[in-house]
Each structure stands twice: as C-alpha cells, then as structure tokens.
Amino acid sequence: MNTQRLIELSAFDEDSGELNVIIETPKGSRNKFDYDEKLGLFKLGGVLPAGAVFPFDFGFVPLTKGGDGDPLDVLVLMDEPAFAGCLVRVRLLGVIEAEQTERDGQTTRNDRLVGVAAKARQHGDVRSLKDLSEILVEEVEHFFVSYNEANGKVFKPLGRFGPIKAGKIVDEGIELYRAGTGKSRSRKRGASARPGARK
Image (tube, rainbow, N blue to C red; front, top):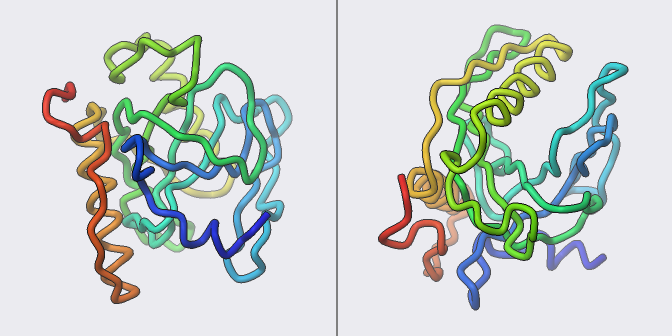
C-alpha cells in the first residue's frame, strides 16, 4: 500500500462525488484497528469484550478532522466485510450526532457518520437513515455506547439527521483539517450534499 497516497487522498472522489472512506475495522471483528499516520500502517488499537463485534465496517474520511481532533468516523453498510486499508466509495445516509466524555472528564463532539457502499446490493436503494429500521439504528447507537463504556468512556447520542446534515459535517471536517495544515483548495461537492437530498 502506498501510504503517502492514502494520506493525500481527498475526502470526496472527484469523478463520482462520492465520499472516500478508508476502512479500519471490518464488520464482525472483535479487534479494533487504527491507522497510524506516522508509521504509515494499521495497528491493533484494542479488543472488544467477548461477544461484542463491530456491526458494520468502520472507517474514516481522509483529510478531515472532527471535534475530537481525529478524522471523521464512518460506519459503512455493505454486503460483505472489507479489510483494513480498503478504499470504499460511500453514499452518506446521515449522522448520529454525539458527545463523548473521556476518562479525565473532558467532553468533545464525536459524531458517527453512517453511509452505504456505492456498489452495495443489499442496501442499494437506501438513501437516508429514515430508510433503515428503527431497531437497526438503535442497535448501532447501543454498540457505540457499550463500546465506549468498555473503554471507560461515555458516549451520549444527541440526535439523528439525514444526508444533508451529514454532508455539512464533512464540509466542516474538511475546513477544520485545512485550518490545521494551512491548505486551501477547492473540491467537487459530494453527492450526499447535493440539492434535493433528504434531510
């Protein structure tokens, strides 16, 4: 893998307008993998308790920064698990806005973007979080609550919003990243943030 190109990959694919997501942890894994930018490789970040696994593939959007200082997180729905380092083009479905309180008591925003792989078959007709079952979304929220609890943290969901809000969060994440690097360049707006997308 060319790690330099991974670091320089833009948040949106210039041709399709779809979101670029780098998978860190595949669906069904107890192991939590993290991309280490300094080392240029994926490393084991932790292990979930027995019986707990990631419900869907989990990754990040390159060249973005969230309220916690890390790249924006994305939970990706697709037919089969990917692998650490796999680039998946994603259509945003929405966002679960949340606060996360660390062990030291510091609270930051740690939203969870939710998307579907652009080439997915099983969820190919899904366009918004509203298209998913209420039970499924509740289970996703519960996963993040219990995952953080196991690590001595508190994850508090604040609300659920559709693809327009999710697209704005990505835009803000791009600008926050640029503010920290001094870079400024135009990009093609993502398909999720185009007019007509559902809130």
